[in-house]
Image (cartoon, rainbow, N blue to C red; front, side):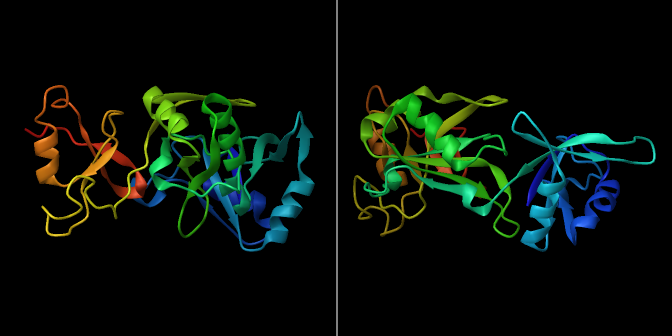
Length: 254
């Protein structure tokens, strides 16, 4: 599996890299966008065999820890394109194996640059907030390439609150420098922390309040009750949506 940047059209790339073995050229949201060109200037080369990836890496030129391969097209000759290997093991990293993972001390990190590995995300967040015990990069369930989001679990409440209070974090590593959003990681199998399901027929709580004065899951009844109190009426509930991405509801419960 390879991340390749600054390249030509897919047919030319397929022709250039087929010598390393059978492959598929793909990029995020390819099916939905129906675009012939990758909109963000990079794509994934998915090889059938792991040995093909190693052959490609061996054929690359290394420059300042970066890998390049010269690719030609009918209009351009020997254009260097950057190759970034992505190993399946790059998607998870445990920083402190002695600490159990607590989903309620886990944050969602949106907009993670796709070349960033879990170990790099863990080190950045640990340097900023401390207490990181795990980091993971969300990957495509079928093709396993990075989707541009991640999760970070903390070992203590103080670090967790510091991260979600910041709301944004600057991810800096090598040539990566990007400001990304940090939110609580919203679970979909939690009971209401106020009534434990007694006021909602035992159903899982649909809302999570990310305000540091709450940090609880609520059913609709308990959300309305608790957030009618002074100082809490402007809290916005988070709900879980597709791709594990929490979103704020565009209205306020009264």
